[in-house]
Amino acid sequence: MNTLLILSALGVIALFAEIFRFRKGLFPLILLGLAAAFIFTANQYNHPHVFFGMMNFDNYAVIFSCSILVIAFLWFMMAKNYFLQETSVTDHFSLILFSLVGAVVMVSFSNLTMLFLGIEILSVSVYVLAASDKSNVMSNESGFKYFLMGSFATGFLLFGITLIYGVTGSFDLATIHTQLTTTNEKGLVLAGILLLLVGLSFKSSLAPFHFWAPDVYEGAPTTVTTYMATVVKTAAFAAFFRLFSTCFTAAGNWSDILWWMVVLTLFIGNVSAVRQKSLKRLLAYSSVAHAGYIAIAIVSMSATSASAIFYYTLTYSISSITAFTILFIVSRYKGSKDISAFEGMSKANPLLAFAMTVAMLSLAGIPPTAGFFAKYYVFLTAINHGNTLLVLLAVIAALIGIYYYFRVIIAMYFKPEQQLVPIQVGPLHRTVLIITTVLTLLLGLFPNLVLGWI
Amino acid sequence: MTDLKAIPLDWYILLSSILFCIGIMGVLFRRNAIIIFMSIELMLNAVNLLLVAFSAYHNDAAGQVFVFFTMAVAAAEIAVGLAILIVVYRNTKSTDIDVLNRLKG
Image (cartoon, rainbow over all chains, first blue to last red; front, top):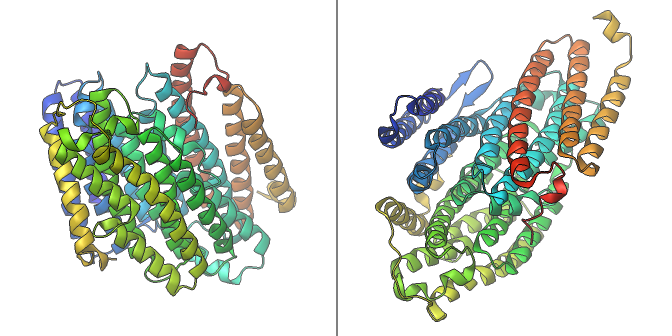
């Protein structure tokens, strides 16, 4: 609860900062606030709190909240300069802080009302942020598509919640679970679960409901895209898993349907990424593909799923922040988001090229980076659950993935350089890149540092 | 309350499902952004109707409280949506969603 209070208070302070000309001090204050929220949240580890049956801060919620706060901290450091050039920096920061409130609610709900509210608090802020580059038609289009698809998905989600409520007479997750084991209304339950599945798949960009993701990710400002690919994705999957693991383990055969959706996601994501010229769009499709890998752990619901999802979302977010930060720096410098803008970068900017290589290797899942163990634990969970065929297909998809991630590395190291002028990297960006690269390697070498937490 | 229960529950489910499907069709097939917004509202209100019906049949107030949340959120959502639409209109001079075709591939 303290987490939510601190984040909301920070959001309100950020709104007032514009009136009281407090812009300069706002950024350090937000970082301090996030650090305080992190400490308060981490303190609740092993001390579960329940709030009126609406939210349950168990270890799962604490760990995911902490991971979201860490990612948000890195995100603020990455995005500060971009938003400082805009006229309305405080609005953007407060929107992000309010959407973080939504993300924390999404990982800690124990009632369907809070799930709905959390998703909406998160989404409505991000719709605005996606369209925040007001004079750019691409950004408008991105925000508009995100809004349309998002509220369309909300409709499905609500209808699903309603049907489940109709059968069980309650919004409480534990009550729903016990009611569903005895109910006779199998048809309504299945319809409700499928509608919830559709709604949550929209939010977490699983095929065939992923089609908005590449457009929205490409059109939105790069910093906002980073936020969507990291915090929003983590929160969406944490909510997805929390709902399905507490409520629907005994009901219906939704996992067969999710099985097919995962296979579709893996191949659509990876194959579409191969033919992209723009790195931003490539990362968008790669984000769709990664949603597929994460969902493998939901299909093979078992005791290790939660930690597999946590490790995967954390490492994916960290590597994504590296990749998007470098894309942001390079695209600003060269005015192009294409892979060709990276040609010959290893000569002029060896350190940037190294950081990008580590991020790409991690996203591709090659040891000794963290991405390898992320895939390994997800696959291990699936094999222990008996989903060998799914793992086989996922490995084939991952091999396709290696091809396009290496295109970026090859462009940096083996293509002739266009200009030998080194790109200036600001101190904040440098700090972010150092932290994320070190974390990627560290988590890859010692995955046990975070694995046993859930 | 008794009046609400005079109609069998199945009919409420049927009516809401039909309204919901009309909403889906509107979103999928209409090209004017305002009409699409109206269709989304129709989807959400179909859900509200069903929630109230279930709430009455279960003798449980939680469903009706949920409807208030839904209405508040829907209002916030549409406010944001219309604001984004105004920005789009300023740049493209159109509310037809087919003009938004710059992002593809």
